[in-house]
Every structure is written in C-alpha cells, then in structure tokens.
Length: 207
Image 1 (tube, rainbow, N blue to C red):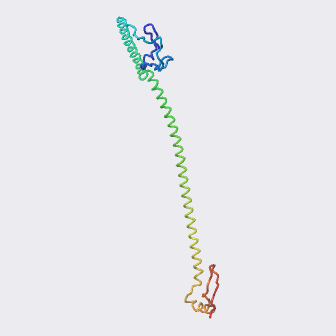
Image 2 (image 1 turned 90 degrees about the horizontal axis):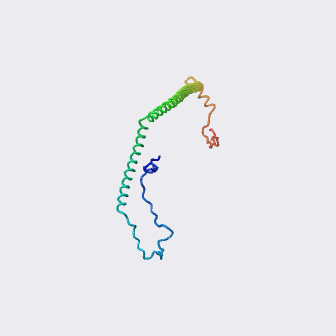
Image 3 (image 1 turned 120 degrees about the vertical axis):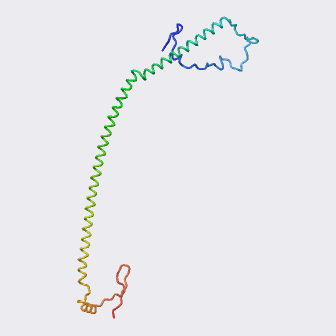
C-alpha cells in the first residue's frame, strides 16, 4: 500500500518496517589501503565545506518535522492494522469463522457417531463369537467328561469280570484237598535264571 507524503508516493511497509543500520563500505574504489597518496594530493589539507547556520536551522526543523510525520503515519497504520484484526476477531468475519467451526464440529461429530456405531457392531459380533466359542468349549468338555466316565466304567467292568474269572481259581476250603493233590502231581520249579530279555538261561532240576 502507498501513501502520498509531500507530493511523493511512499510505500507503507517501508514506513512500518524497523530502520536498520547504515551500511558503509570498508574500502571504497579501486585503491588499496597500502597504496601511497597520489602525487597530485600530496600536502593537501582537507577542509570541510562551509555550513550556513541559517540553512542548518532550516534543515533541522525540516528533519524534525519529517520524523514527526513518519512517526504519526507509522502509528496510524499500526492502529489500522490492529482495528482490522479486531474486526476479524469480533465482527462479521468472526461470525463466519464461528459458523464454519460449528459446521466442522457437526461433521466431526457425525464421523465420530459412525465410528462408534461401527465399533459397537464389531464389539457385539466379537462378544457373540466369544459366547459361542465358550458354549462350544463347554459342550466339548462335557462330552469329554462323559466319554472319560464311560471309559472308566468300562475299565471297572472289565476289572470286575476279570476278578470274577480269577475267583474261580481261588483256593477255598471246598477245593483245598484237590489243589494240594494237583500241586503234588504237577510240581513247578521256580529256581531259574533269566537274561536281560527275560529268557530262561539256567534252571536247576527238581529232586
């Protein structure tokens, strides 16, 4: 943005920008520091140009006036920037921003509700699946226990039948004499030796 000051167009940003330091070249021209003084300038005494006191007073007044004008413009531009910023925050732009934020909030809430519904469906499906798995495992455990019980009963029934068969060979008072006679008629020699495989390798003769 430009502003007309004293018949000249001045850029506002330049007035608002902080003033930097004056840049001065360390060495000016093509002559180095070690070069001697030119012969045409030997013995010359440099005298500053004369200054008119009346002109100096006028220049100081004009410079002071220039500083006041630039400071006033800078403050005015700063006030305008702050006023625009305030209007953006509290005026129609703020209302528009609030409306946009409300619309964005509603959109985000809709997305959130959809995500919550999706997660609810996933969680419900997972709970149902876990319940079905638990029921299936319970039924399998019940069937396994029942099968083990049947096997246990069959094993006990087999043991009872075997015991009933063994009872027939028990020695009782009724068959004591007969079993003694059988043992005398059919003697058995238990004096023998076996190898690692359980085979009889040595046995004494009955006398």
